[in-house]
Image (cartoon, rainbow, N blue to C red; front, side, top):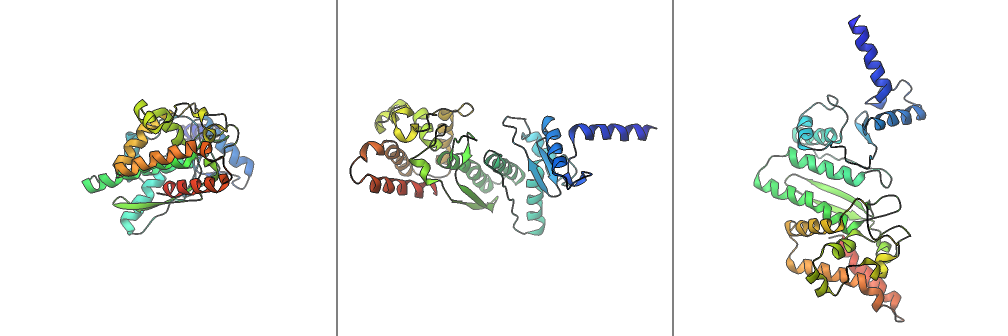
Length: 305
């Protein structure tokens, strides 16, 4: 009788929150059953669901407190299916296979704009940094890996009509706790000179104007108001609700120092941003198109730095 009651309670719970692995669905070939299971779990703030060794996530667009140090400790060296679905389980599985089999591991993150690919990559790095040993040489590399993200996002992400922090480039990270490199590709070059209504240029321009102190802006001869610059105001949307540009500028500045950007290189970056902001004022002659292309080409090598 007790076993029957336990089984009945489990069935009721499954009906309410769905199954943790889509392969356990009775009608696993039915698209409606698939979507319905996702919906049930999402309504209970369960954003992760397995399909065997693959994990499906639904972006909640809010903080669910799923990634703190306590959660990281729970998923360390635990069997893949022992705990509820989580991106940390994917990271731990790859990390353990790398150590035990001494073979490279690959985690592929895919999805449409706004699905959470950028955030997922950051959570993977967060877990790998916490799971690896804490030798000084490793800590230095981990800091650089984690802080490379703010730089990449500042120069490669922008607000679109679907997502306030949309990656406008592809990213392939190759490495281990002792070192690695990041390859960027397919940067959306045209965004430097054109944005659709409701969209922004790359974050770094607005971060500079919002976060730089008055002396820096005075030295660069820049105004704090983005609407003063054609290339920053075509979308009529210079501010974001959930991202503080001033705070992010401080993060990027710190990240550049830790990732070994020299003072000269940082000054060069600021001058390049200045030119991008003000170029339309200078490119009104017959050579406008040629000059504009030159400026765009100057920006791209840095964005792939």
